[in-house]
Image 1 (cartoon, rainbow, N blue to C red):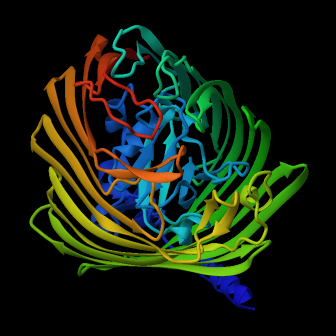
Image 2 (cartoon, rainbow, N blue to C red; image 1 turned 120 degrees about the vertical axis):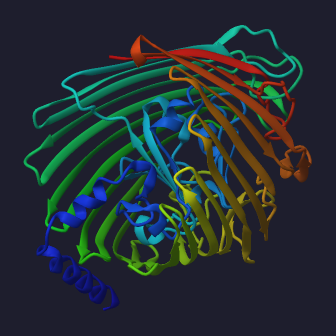
Length: 623
């Protein structure tokens, strides 16, 4: 009954949006990208109206991140730690957001949720997507299940890929080569190569784009042991997209992508070299339909993903997972201050374990945003998770903020959040071949936030945010029993995030963030209590840009698989340097990226190799 009431209310609110004018919606869309955020409400609203400290990585920052991986760039942000991102390319990545685990993070690619149902953590493998194919990223931290559904407990990473330009034909090509060495073996041999190419354009109502990329790295071993052998990594990726604008109000697009990577690795138990190989093939396809009307928009996103993985090791296996997702929502602006969003999403995850196992979720949801003319803003909503195995579960989000307007563009914003999330065990944890436990219960999360943000003008912004997360029935792997179990106690994760952006001069910018994280209730491996990232960039001339980055990663525990006890890993600091020069009127850009400039020796993951000083040079050509 409660589900029927919710759906009826949602439909009533959506149907009420069929009368209005186009003016307000258009005014939202023309905001400059560096002044608006989308992920916390799905409306393009000015940052000062958002009750979140959303991180937006735009085209300019991505252009200055050439030579890095997607995981490295994400790990540089506040509240995010990705273990393995500083190790051998192809190493397994551990995603930790606000003291949470990878399965508590949802990844969207072009608005479509992507996940590998066959993995134990049911998360998207960031190794599959090259950074060169990314156009922008928004990171929404905290519980966000109201808008993004199950598993959105610690963060949502929304990635927009490169698409068609505004000309009939455009070509972008890039290539790079560099070293790939540890701090104790500085021979500077070339062992890392990457190539990317993309075409795209607009022909009347038709938009098209297609891209391919390839990457290879060798020379490094997986383990940090004497006499270590090489464990190479390779990746291939291709994608195609077609868009058709039927008229000014209706647009349809379809896309498809294929990725393959192969990574050799060694035996973790006993720390010995081994001829192990892990390969993954990913196939994705999707479609999006957008229909605009006065004061509103209806959007439908649908996607299918298939993952096929083969593990050749002492415990070999083949894993196949399929995921079908669909999300339809209606955005409507009531007057000048109230924005409503009504939607329904569907997820079907399927894995083959000798026999097929499947989950299905059908979730109606509603979200409202109120922006007053006197400073009060409110983002609130709820979702009814309806799971084929676990029944119904409510989640909600209440996110008020108050903005004190200053002179010109300055403001002081106070903000707070109370939100919940819901995570069901993965199909592998319930029915897999290793440690499966069909009696697992779902995990529930609650997040509290309180903070402030002050912007003097477009050249200066600083924010401080306190967060507190509570996890009930957390699913973990019990090594003593070789079984997945629910934690009997409550896990608490809390901390503080500080961020600043400053442009003291027209050609000079400074970015910095600090994160304090404390997790209680389990061993919290690989989560640093203190973490600092900073960057100083300068436009030396219209054609030359240079930047210096400093990062500090504090003490954090890890597990010693010889003794199955936790040990503390020492803190470490890294300095990176980047410089680029534009030629041919900006059509050609060459760059040099220097990583770990002072060749610091450190341990990121116990027993595994970390990269030392490395150099990468490359170019990007746009025609």
